[in-house]
Length: 108
Length: 108
Length: 108
Image (cartoon, each protein chain N blue to C red):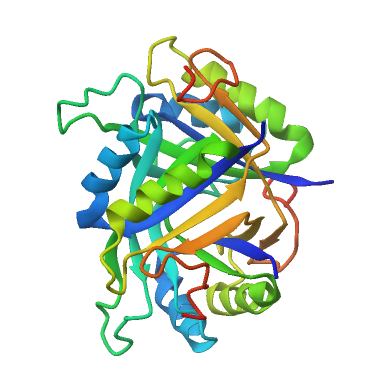
C-alpha cells in the first residue's frame, strides 16, 4: 500500500472545524503551521495582501486520501475566495520515531 | 499535464522582491512561512547559527516550473552564502476548496 | 543519483540534539519551523491537545536518507508518545540560488 502526503491550506478560522472533522474520520496524526497566503483576491497595491492561513500536513495510506480531502473540503468550504487548497504528494517512506516502525499514525 | 510543488527558501529580506517577481509572471497562489535555516556559513560554536529565512510554496503546472525557478533565483540571488535553495517535488493531485475543482490558482 | 526530501517532526526539546547529530554526520543545510502537532495521546476534550513541535526539512541524496533517518531517530527517541515521525518524499529537482547550480548543500 502506497502512502501520500496531504497538504491543506485553509483560513485560520476554519482550523478547528477541519481538525474536528479529521478526528471524526479517525485521523490521529497531523501537523499545523501558520502561514501567509496569497490568493487571487489579493490587493497588489497593499502590503497587506498576504492573509493569515494555516497549513495542515497529514501522512496517510493512499486509500484514505479521498476521505481526508472530502473532510477538509466539507469543513473549510465557504464559497468565498480564500477557502484554500488541498495538494497531495507521493511518499517514499514513513517511520515513527517512538517505535522505529513504519506504522502509520492511525495504525499505532 | 503534471503538476509540481515548488519549495523555495530565501533570506527574509528578499521576500518582497521574490513575491513581486512571481506576481509579475502571473503566479496567483503561494504560501509563505517563517523558518530557521542552517547553511554552510553556520557558526557551529554559536547558538545563533540558525538564520531567519522564509519558505515559499507554490503548486504549478510542470511547464511553468522553469519560469518560477528563474524568477525566484533572479530576485533572491546576491552571490553571498545563504541565498537559499529551490526544490521541486512531484504532485499527485490538487484541489481548490472553494470550487471543489482541480483548477490551478493561475487558472481560476 | 536521485534526491529525497526528508521531513521530520520532533518535540521542541529534542531539536538541539537532533541538529547536533545531523551536523555530526555532515548535514550542512536544513530548515526548521515551529508546528503544532496532534498525536495519539491527544486529549480531545481539551483545546490544548495540540503540542509544540518542530519540523525539520532536508534535501539529500537518496543514499544518505538512511543515515539521516537513523540520526534523527537516535537523537529524538524517548520511547514516549509524541516522539515524532520521519517522512521521505521524492524530489524532481534541486537548485542552489547562490551558484544557480544543482549542487547539494553537503557538496557545496
